Structure formats: C-alpha cells, structure tokens
Length: 334
Image 1 (cartoon, rainbow, N blue to C red):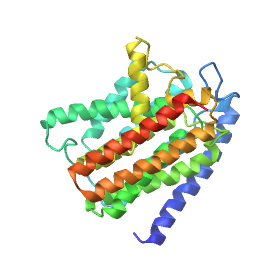
Image 2: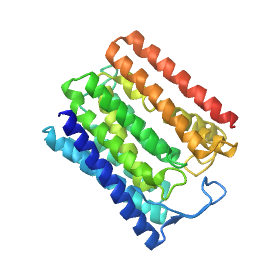
Image 3: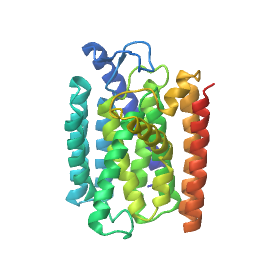
C-alpha cells in the first residue's frame, strides 16, 4: 500500500472512531448509562460508560477488512474474529448487569481457545511440545485480556497504551517487511487511528469511558496481534511493547493475591492510581505512559532489526528498566 493509501486507510478509521464515539456518547447520555463515582473511582462526576460500543465494532471491521485485503481465508482467523465480537457482547451485558466473575472467565477461556488456532505457529518456537505451547498461550492470553481491563482506570490511559502498541506493530511491518507482518502492520495502524479518534472524547476530563465492552475485546485483539508477532519470531517485540501494562498489573495483583484479596474486584492500588492519589494530575500520568510507550517502541523495533538474541535480551532489560523507573516515579507521586 502506498503512503497515500496508508493515509487514507488510517484517516477513515480515525474519523469513523471520532464520529461513532460521539453518536455512542449521546446514546449513553439519553439512556443514563453512567459510571457513578465511589471511593475507588478516579472521577468525581457521573460519566457515561460504554465507549467500547464505538471502538469494538470498528476493531472488528478493521480486522475483517485487513483479512479480506490480505487474502486470509482460514476459518480459524474468522472464528477468532467472531470470538472477539462475542466477547464484546458479553462485556456489554457485564457493563449493564454485572455478570459473575465465573461466567466472564469461562467465556473468555472459550474465546481464547478458539483464538489460539488463528496463530500462525507455536508461540514459544518449539521450546515445548505444541500442546503445552497452546495451554500456556491460553492462560497468558486470558491474563492479558483481564490486565487490560484492570488497567483501564483513568482517562486516556488505555487509548495511549493500545495506540503505542499499534504504532509499534505498524513500524515493525514497515522496517521488517516480511510477508507475515504485513497484515499485522495494517491492523496496528488501524488500532492507532481508532484510539486517536476515541481519545478525542476520552482525554481528561473524559466525556465517556471505554467500559468492559471496549477494554475486553481490545485486550483480546491486541493479545492476538502480539502473540502472532511472537509466533513469527519477534518475541522480544511482543514482550517489550506492552510491558508497562504487564508489570503494573501483574505486580499489583500478585501483591493483592498474597494478601488474600479478591483480585477481580475494583481497587486503587495500581501504580498509576497511586500516582493520581498522591498528587499527579491525570494528564501528567497518561503523558508519562505515552513517553514510556515511545521508549519501549524504540527498543522493540531496534531488537527486531538487529535480529540478535543478545540484543533481544539487552533491549528487554532496558525496557524493564524504563518501566520500573516510571513505576517508581508513580509510587512517589508529585
């Protein structure tokens, strides 16, 4: 696709995201579907929840268009996309009726098991038997879906995180022009465009929130993209790009689990939440996540181009160091 084609492609999804989010915002206001503030909230006024009603359909359309454009005919890929749509419907019901954790987790496992067959190759590159590779990927993917949902707690943060991951995958496809990365690159660019359109309404002070209907399918599709990147040999890229969300969520929830708390319940203990509670303004926090995302993207692309195991580990260590610097900064607050 030419530069003009890429610009047109991304512009269509950006404008569609901006306009459809505005339509959804008015719908949520009319129906009074609001997220009411409580002692765990980072917002002070009732705010419409369900922006994913705009984001999720556009994500489904995006992936379907890329599949059609790149000639994907495997039924496994289309079933994965259907599973993403099913998760969107489930999550909308959860936004409205608070489904039990057991129901949510069970259906997430079903969706991920379907999605595993849409990966091109074993993710761990033959280090373990294929059946064990699939089992480990299922648990890792379900965890990624939920950590993406858990981390969506302040204005703009998931839009920034998803957009930086999408941009990283797109640049990977540009600089490492292998056939297996072409479709993933288009998807990454589309995700970036959709997130920018959504952030126009979700930047602080947010006019509406993503809600589970947005964060869960978004985590599912991003999880598939990153796992597919890893299965095609770029495992360092797949680990480095989302490492802020991986470390903040995993460290926080392990700590809560050790205290025997219910990790699926809402709380305000993530590092970014502690930063806001201790005096940093929400835009300051999300801006730091943005700059960290650029640092991680730079390291990931450098690792992909170097094609060296030593450089992969070096880049991963440098990425982890950057993440811990930001987490320490957030823990200190202002």
